[in-house]
Image 1 (cartoon, rainbow, N blue to C red):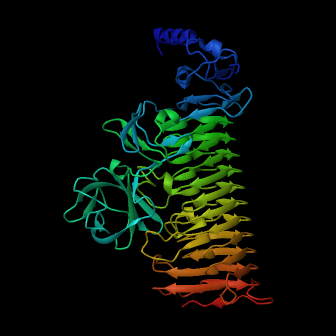
Image 2: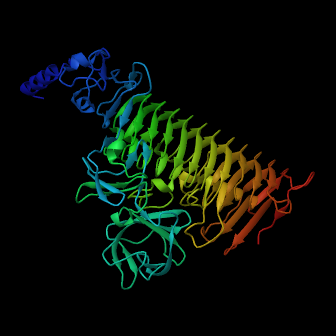
Image 3: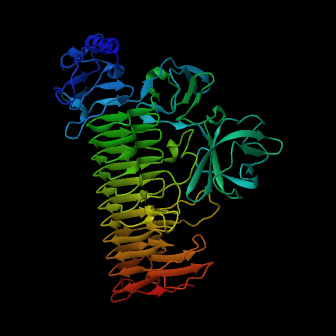
Length: 583
């Protein structure tokens, strides 16, 4: 660096009240933020609790060193995103925490919307200060305007995987041509997939919808879809719509009161906390409310600790974490759409968290579950050597816990009420691409309590559900399933195209179809073998049911699917395990 550039940087830092010091000799400094702060003050003033800054934008003017803290006043609400731009060091992280007394400080992703006027009938309209992805009425989420208002409309016929005719092709439901282009369309192209697409064109004469791109899976009669994000669908109290071209937001609430009688907030900031590439951070005791996308977003980050934070109603993931060495502990995530906690990384621990109401159908927005399949999971993680321990996952659209990654440990969790919107999934679910894929190798699922894996056949064209307590899917191998309790699932423990799985000392109670099912089918070309089932207690829902089944479908398998030892089948006192052999 040239001499003149060095002096220019020195002058800039000194004018901001920030002294130059190496990270080795720097004395830790704490900067304070509060709703009654003053952004005109120099940085040196903000190091005192009595003279804080007011806006999160001031954070971007700081140079932070290892050991420094950014503190937010308890009981206050600040709008925007906390952006981490600097890294700490091992033993000297940069802290993002709270100070003072009262409730945790709120980092709000929303802005208040005022100036509501009557539009027509019960609809109100207002200018939106920023693009809006969610709308909240008096602190509760509203539903993006949709048709039908509940459930799905079935497909009657499909030309290809992006062109189909719906029920009610007479047009009384769908109206004129040109009415729906730009609307979001969510279609259940598989039991485990709710695809989000855009309507490219609707032709009232032929009654065909044409999508912007193909669905994830083949479209067939009987599959269901619904539309949202269109003013044409705004016909019910509690719904809303944002018109991006006119920058206006429309809403309908139960009474005919003007919007001034309510607090209307629209999600305007993508993230509550964001870090890209930073290391050695601690985030503790903060409440991230109503962000457009994620409460906490970490990309290529390492050694970040997130403790005792709350995330309320993010538009996609509660916590979206990519990198490694994370500790995610004692956080509360409510109302995420695509994932409560998503980890793409390694060597991390997710423990003692509560994740509630993930993928609620009334919360599905413009982007739905995204373009791919298999979303709406309480916790999902991808990568090796991760530990998911002692979490509570309550009410998930799809899997309670879904994972891929070598040597993963899923232990001591409570999973209650999963597979509420889609199925062919489980309370705990694992999958791998092939038997040579390391993501399906090793690890353990042990001492978990899995309750009420429900299943949902709506929009599938079928009436049967497919919801398993513990579901080890294609090419999972060399894994232990030990000491778990599964209550009220279709299948308690399901091994599908697996190898060398040890199922040991589990209890499966009141499972609607069968407690244990081993199946090999054409979805995997290589054989299934080496599975061992020992010292389990199985109790089916009906006393005349089998405790275990095996099935080989559409292929041959030269070796036994599994071996059984010392299991109990409690269809009646003293009964032993009865196995329906492979077909």
